[in-house]
Length: 188
Image 1 (cartoon, rainbow, N blue to C red):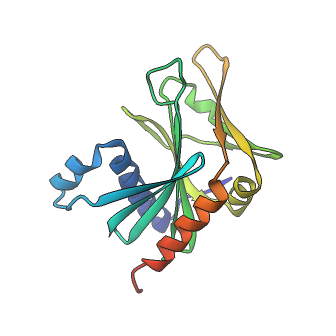
Image 2 (image 1 turned 135 degrees about the horizontal axis):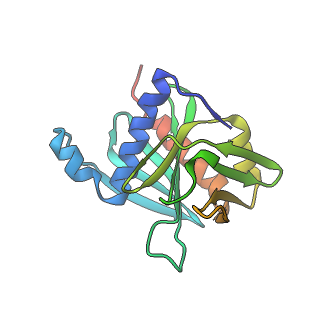
Image 3 (image 1 turned 180 degrees about the vertical axis):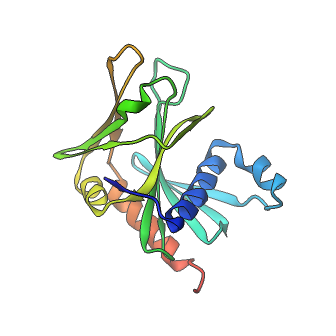
């Protein structure tokens, strides 16, 4: 389950949103327009996940862990998942980007083994629909222990669409991302 948003959560979400925009190629223009110098980034593949880090850190956040699923039969993005540990708040921010064109009111059901939660959609843009929030400890635990998972959404005709994701490499990548974010966290 994702926890409801506090002011700190919204702030963390904006950091993560900026990082995902950097990953999709849209952030440099947005950053320049806001007077922010775009950061260089490195991408380290750990099995099916990637740890993406920025130098210098963006708003005190250096790294995030990413997973991307693309349906081979569709030219649009299937799903993107991103998690970033925010040392200043001692929590992990999570963001899922889901494809457009599904029944938002039914939400998205995330399932990993015996863990299942219905996630509400926060907003939709041209890039997709976003589920954002603070990752509950049970979610992180399920992701660390699991092998794979699914996100189920419903198409406009009511049929279920299953978006699979692998957790192969998640545990190692998540720990690496956490360690790097702790190491490069600004002194409070």
